Length: 363
Image 1 (cartoon, one colour):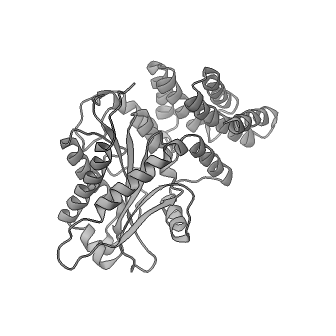
Image 2: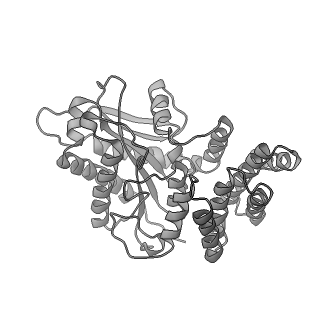
Image 3: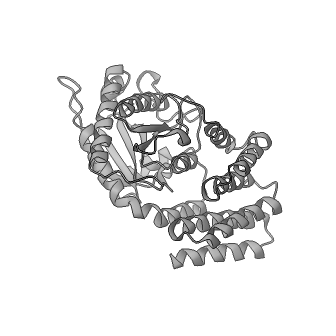
């Protein structure tokens, strides 16, 4: 922790000394992220104020910098989730919505404003966090990809983004029937930035985060199901898969390093539970009954640096449900009964994990 405090201080000092707008702006937003994460672990208000000040300085000093929209969203989140000032947060989100229509944060601002309207919804749409019963477990389901981000393309033009959304909606219905509250990070064919997905989960105070994907291979011959937790990859195939799933986010090496600093501060506290969740879910998934002649290849539980899992304040996993460009598994993924069966096995694994834990009172 002391190490990251020094990094945050050094970044802030660097920003104040630099004449280069680009470097100074990057240093300010990174120091803000670190200070916010330090507040999460220490609950020291000075860390929160330092995060706020860094973001406000960036917005004021460099109003035309590409990071301003990101800084505004993060500042709005600070006011909403850490300072309890909803009206200020709404004002900031609206500034992004109306002033940054072409930015990658536009959709995040729209989703956040939409969630604050507190309209009743069914689980084929994202639940408003404020409406979730505090006595129920909260599971955040993340259908991979969406919008212009197609994900993998499979047999007959089948798209990963469509399969993932369909399975997530089916899974949501099953969990809801088990008295588990559900929120989806996307509810239709739309693009949601990767790092906004875990932020939405954190905003909703989720208990688990499950990202749903389907796999692909270069030659179309690989088969099987695998489940991942967040860590540096220990094999080339996992690293390559993470690179493919991370394609929708453009990050420099420094930004990547910063995200894993945050992982060290926050997610490491949850890594044991993430591994446990991954194992329980994987065991359930590979028991799927596909009928005679269709066996399941168990590719096991693995680790990889998926950006969509970075920064989650809860146990989080990413599932890869068959290979969409394998002739056999691609055809299976196109079938409603197979998608329903996958949703059932996911629900069984998630429920088994939750049943093994005592429900704690929600703050």
